[in-house]
Amino acid sequence: MKYKLYQNNKRKYLLDLDSVTLVELDEIAYSHLTENKKNKDVEKDIKTLKNIINKKIKESEKFYNSDIIFEPSNIILNITKACNLECIYCYAHKEKPESMNMKLIKESLEYIFSNTKKKKITITFFGGEPLLEFKKIKESVALSKKLGKKYNKKIGYSITTNGTIMDKEIIDFLIKENFSLTLSIDGCEYIQNFQRPFVGGKGSYEKIAENIELILEKRKKLNVRATVTNQKIEIKKIAEHFIKELNVGGYSFAIASYPYTKKWTEKEKKKLYKEVEEIIEEKDKRFIPLNISGVWETIKKGEIKKYPCGAGLGIVSIDIDGKIYPCQRFTGEKDYELGEVGMQWEEFINYKKEFYKKVVKKIEEDCGLCELRNICGGGCPYELLTKSKSRSISCNLTKIGVEKLKVGR
Image (cartoon, rainbow, N blue to C red):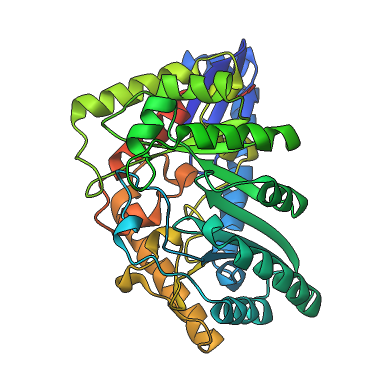
């Protein structure tokens, strides 16, 4: 039994790492575990806990061995390669600014809706900048509603946008259709304008800040996402700006990695970790990045993650040519194609299973001995399988999240 002990707000907890089971301890049990003060009742309770843990682990293994996990439930439509920004770490602006046509969108939605066994489907619009194709997004939503009725599916919508192409019509539409909305913004004005300028070099901060204000006039909560580069390692300033200046509900951050940016030095990594540790201690829980609070939620729910995310499972990412990939990060990576729209469904599912095996094999090779393996699930499959150099940083951020666990927040 591998475990960690915590003390939060004068309360004591044990976290079993194999089963991701969090248990509150009384003083007797805590002393039994920390001071070798043996107690027969505690020994009995530990034996009972071990039985519960073993049962939970078996149930988790049963879930991951079922075929239902391969049925798509999140369709990512890479609706355009075009973008009006020229971010310093992005590869997209180097591609041809092509877009998905409505014929393919219809075929893609029909293909998934008519075949998947999942009852709820989320459609995510991705780019490039997806709102450059707002007309197609509206048509796609209308079409999906018809398909939902035809195939008895519940539908949700999601979009990741740079937030610069918005007006009253777009905002009203996104709110009316209850879109899960994520805006990409890298921080305060000088960081945003340096890292995410418009094509041509003009700063984009002023425009996105205006649009965030417009959204918050009609919607109480908005989450944003920042990309952190080793040219601007200022997590504390970024967090403070998001929470105090822009008044967003929450934020997450991703690490820009080589070959899209310069390689991170050990000194730069240490600065990043130190700043993350400091913002975790802030009293206002909105300062806690969703990356970290997400780890905490996994622990509090007691969720065993044998696999890190939905890539290659519930998620499918469809490119502008109809090729299908495990998620948006793999889109365009020919070595990770899962097939194409319209192919025989059973063959498509088999490709997904092969991808899953490949990821699990790599997880066991890299993470088999890591005590946090069942908490993070092995980390991002893209970072596992490709030349991305941000994996070690992601691992260390997860470790910080577990070490700094705040049970009562």
